[in-house]
Amino acid sequence: MYLASFFHDGNLKFGFRKANESAIIDAVKAEKQLYSQAILPNTLQGVIEHSEALARLKEINQRESEVNGDAIIPLTDVLLEAPIPQPKRDIICLGLNYREHAMEYTTAMEEEQNLPKYPIVFTKATTTVIGPDQKIKSHRNVTSKIDYEAELAIVIGKEGTNISKEEAYDYIFGYTIINDVSARDLQKQHSQWFLGKSLDTFGPMGPFLVTEDEIERPVKLDVQCRVNGEVRQNSNTNLLIFDIPTIIETVSGGVTLKPGDIIATGTPKGVGLGFNPPKFLNEGDVVEVEIEKIGVLRNIVS
Image (cartoon, rainbow, N blue to C red; front, side):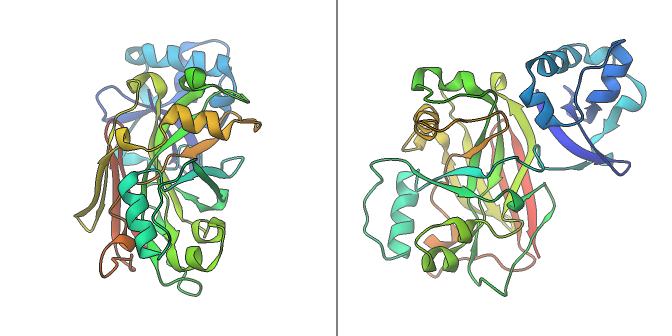
């Protein structure tokens, strides 16, 4: 399923994209049409947290042809939000998780050029999250070096601690896109990356949350970032230094992951910092992150 949170008629709703990709089905309205008893929560986060709600949503998806009327909304009539507009916990992020990006980053930052022996893990504030076509604030009062980072994001589907690599995929609810927007000057100034990664609006996400069963294991998806139409990043998740099972095993070691937790897996080479001279983002720039089988996440810098 291609799940989405969206605004329609001034209200935040959730649902799934029709098979022909022309419309969104309002899950709550569709449930009322098909069932005498309603069990769906009001948010996609609620679905992720409750297995019976997910089972009901899958049933509605399978009965798509029976849904009609105002439960079917043309995509042109909705404003897509981030699939999880207000995460309950900070986004977990992997740093320097593609070999060539690790090299370009450490070169530009004048750091020692060693590939990480263990996953580099940091977090990004929940207040960074915005949806497709929403504006990335430039924050010129605190930064002059805004950069993009195209990343595949994992959404956890059930609680777990000390998850093994062999079990890792069983804990994934689905996948989405995140642009890990970064203030490189703040990142350089501070020994930790939190501030440089956590300015408001620095976490565009979406457009869809694609359920895990739609993506073949192991995950090998093309990742691309374009700025004003120019291709800057072009890679594949198969090139991750630490793959998805390793990431989940690492971040769950002694730490409980919960339904709805978001893990950004890292970005490939081609970030603005890596060019000579650097190609940082400016007001008016259009940034598009595209990941195979998920979609295109588009935002404008303001």
